[in-house]
Image (cartoon, rainbow, N blue to C red; front, side, top):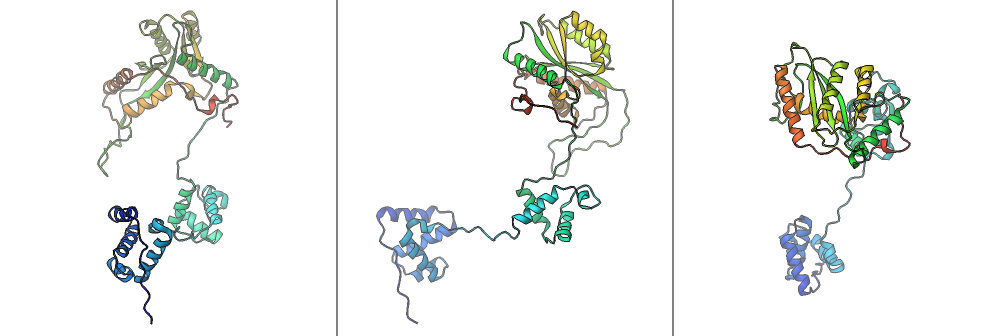
Length: 370
């Protein structure tokens, strides 16, 4: 067999030679480093066989690298990665997996309400003759944006004046944020929080792996319950409250009286109090007192308490003071609540921009119909 003629790299300019040396010193990709090394060895006068031996390659591979470099230049040093093994399951099967995962099992005659991956795999094989692994199904669903999630409940507002009430509340929020209220006027969001009883409550926290904090599972409720009346001042972002044993109309009226007496916090202007349709708020004596003391009760639509800005403050209050707790007494629990309220009041900022990008801001928005 005739010996193959030796192949050498074309003559390089000083800049090309310097660039080649730099690649051999700094390249992190193994393929690029080996190709650059073979080319550099050829520049130094070594044969293709000798260059291949230096980098544990076959002589034919070294010749192909040198030929490619002579034709393409430095682009020949970059590896041309392929797309990997072709997908075993095409778009039709993938669409079938996703469609079936979104279909309740009872609609296809199976006696359960939700899929597990193994049950989904079994049904695909039995009903559609698609033999696929659990891991592949998981990857197909993940790539398609289908996630395992908890179901959620919702309640539509059937208030015939929903749009009117919602627009009134949003207008108050916007005017308060822009300073367009009447002189001295304030918008106060008021609601009740509770009942506050004494019991261990689950929560979350940072703990060593596998060693979370433990709370007692059995308990006896003692000490009765307490109720929190709270108000959120949009102008300052501060929260103020009172704790009472009951939440009747007289307690609500007493809380409103305290709002009017806090002259240092609220000037003598009109108070716009946003609240829900809880029956003590609708009492005639409450309405009469508000009329005579410059207080306007602005009611949220039925089943639309999410329009009351204070609800988000209650969520944070529950998360940071109640979740993960097991207070021994109401005194300890109320001290924790008081400490949290003092903390948020020190860090309070005026409340602005209520749901600015939400669909409720659209002129044609209507509530969901149950």
